[in-house]
Image: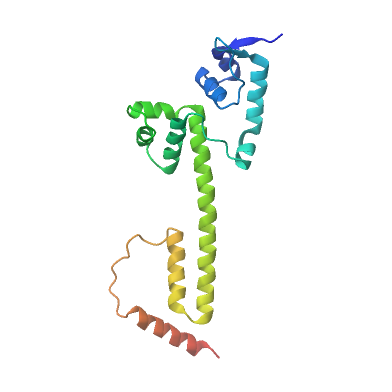
Length: 195
């Protein structure tokens, strides 16, 4: 015989709010509610425990599908891109102010989706940055071997920019020599050092 409980009682038993129970139901984690807002306790509990067990492992392996509510998904994507909660709320088609956007940020599924989208973007960015740094390093080494010092300097400059070590604007420095004169002096020193 199945034991049915209300959303509030299920939330209390699971240690979450009734709103989070509804979100988990919409996301397909907890089986659909029966008429009257009640659900079978045992299957709901088993589904929630499985959801907690799968947690980060399954999410890391395979990104979750978009949220069923298109405006919620748009809100999450905008926040993950760096927009403020208020801006994202408006871009998602909602009317209201800061308070509504801040409240939406507290929804369990919304916060989880934003975290997931940010982690996916960070992983993609990290891979791209690593590839760019490796490639710039290869170019710098090859240019130095070939005596193409200007290309080597540009590669080092690129590496510094990729690592956020290069200032956005070049500092104004009075130089006694032009870049070409400095390169020529460096080449002369290198030639003098070779046996």
